[in-house]
Length: 86
Image (cartoon, rainbow, N blue to C red; front, side, top):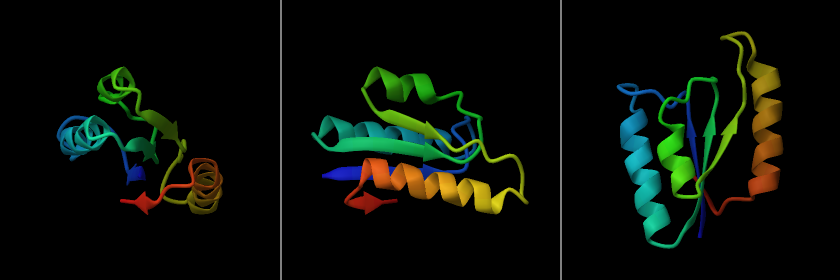
């Protein structure tokens, strides 16, 4: 199953570690996992990359950068074509 996780950022304390553990667990069970991040804050990315989990950074520049980031998200979802978006 192809699973994509969508999150604001991948930093410690911002639910980032919980998402990393969840994504790694899905990967260990044989699922194809990717993580999509709105903001370019991704301290925990190395743990995901070590397991072969793809990371997409949407580079949202602020609260008013809504349309640009949604357009980027749609493009990533077309490429990834996940069965589940969490």
